[in-house]
Length: 297
Ligand code: HSE
Image (cartoon, rainbow, N blue to C red):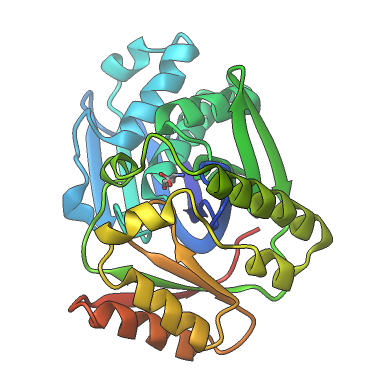
């Protein structure tokens, strides 16, 4: 049986919610899989960054599918039959918009459907978090909306909220890649107590803003001190782009996930905010593409 899944881009952290907050965006990768590979693994990739995606057994979609086949005790199907995977990418690769989460979540869900749903949703969520290494991209890719998630005693806790009404997102995608691994290496082993308090305070109040659907409050709290200051040197133009976006009327502008993309939030004035983000990157000689998106349900 052939299956088809669609998985949204995501923006993780949302400022102070490092490894905890994530939101699904209205930009999707699609994935189709069936047994038409004639006894061999066949992977075709089209769309954004297609040349960067391996088409062999190291492919992230394939590795995620393999996990489900293994957990379901159906591993031999992969060698006996020919899996054919077609991936179409709209989410920019290695730009902080959850492209690897789309591959992991897409692979897990596609494989589970091909096998007629042997694994529970909770099991798939756990596998997704384990494969990705942090929960804040995979959980909104699975549940949509704004998701607060964390791993406690090996259990994944997930709370989904609807995005505040009227929220628009302007994403500036610079023309260079930044691997999450590299961006995480820039983080310090310890930080000032006051900065930790600052983030606990903001992140907790952001949950309150979400539960009230209060867009202004949600965005006003979006100032981070745990990761953005340390990642700024890896993203030339970030400080100016954020400053210009705020001056152009953005309610907030932050690093999207581990970067290098920046995401600004507004109710109106999206065009000017996009231009302001581009101007900030340009001040360091970097060109960027602007995506006008909305939160995805
Ligand atoms: N929370 C992760 C990080 C997200 O900031 O490293 C990676 O997209």
